[in-house]
Length: 140
Image 1 (cartoon, rainbow, N blue to C red):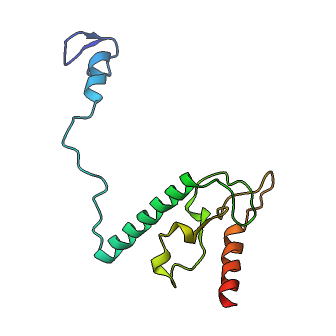
Image 2 (image 1 turned 180 degrees about the vertical axis):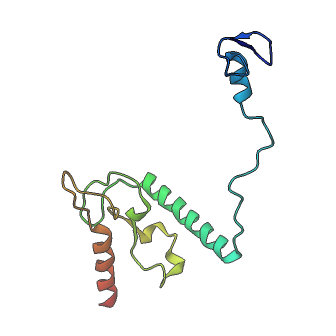
Image 3 (image 1 turned 90 degrees about the horizontal axis):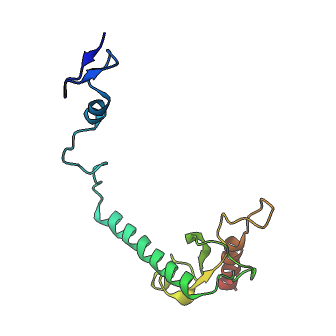
């Protein structure tokens, strides 16, 4: 026993379907409605917005440095494979010297925290070593 398609009234081979193959596909399409942004935008305070803006402006400085300089670590003098924000170490601390935060002369290019050495699973500790080196120099 065969049924007829509800849309075009052609004979439908499968009696369980209400529509033929052509119209079953068309009826499964979601109806277009006005799209709403999902998830809804978060409301953030002025302080948080300022911090987010600062992070992005620092990131832009990092990108400029990455394009300008050779990708050589200032600590171990080996090649840096990939860009990562952790590849940039401040010589003078950002907390103590906020005016030097975006100065390119104050930012050194070092191996990132998660960058691994060749063939071994060990990671470079250049960022930590570089920070320690300048802390010791600042104390002396």
